[in-house]
Image (cartoon, rainbow, N blue to C red; front, side, top):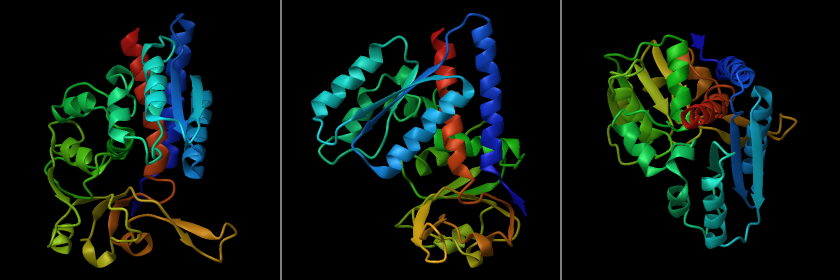
Length: 291
């Protein structure tokens, strides 16, 4: 069993980005600048955004954090986005999800300039991704592709089963892995809550992408020997034996599935760190395109 170490791979990618940023600066080029908008005081969102700011510092980016109150109106938030869209100093920006219930998430995401949409959520960028045109690929699927490529996991001709059909992970992964690309050319089955013969399908899979949002859902009796498993899920489970009072688990019952896997991602330390690394990579791309 080979562990797909997202933490180490993300660190390698950040070093590569930092070197490229230094070269840009040495040539008198613009320093990449990422902005993040966060609405309210969701603890997980604040932690995640702060990690992004620290990552920007590490690779030599400039960063801007815009914190807005929970009760901001939708109109006011859209105005903040409009300002970022025309700010030439900002190469890319993200609006951290989730948003308060009184704000239409889709309206907000569609308001972001596609050329600055480093999250890859705008319909223009999703459409380009689906057509295999140059664009921003959303950070989590982008990170999964990068992990598979760097660990030389063969995807061509393989049967991939994707558990989950979200617009953030499941749906784009099913499209990307079926495309004619270096990490692609697979036959993909996308499963979801209405799939009736789920276990039958996962037992056929050479590669499983688990993004279903149910802790430890994928068990050993659902996979064949030498399977590759990418675990996208992360859930806090109460655990009195831990100092924190909880433990983090993915959508895969890691201890039992790892015994049958050829490649597998851990939780934490697998896909999660790759997401921030690829967000930085998209921001660097946005800066280079603009200049």
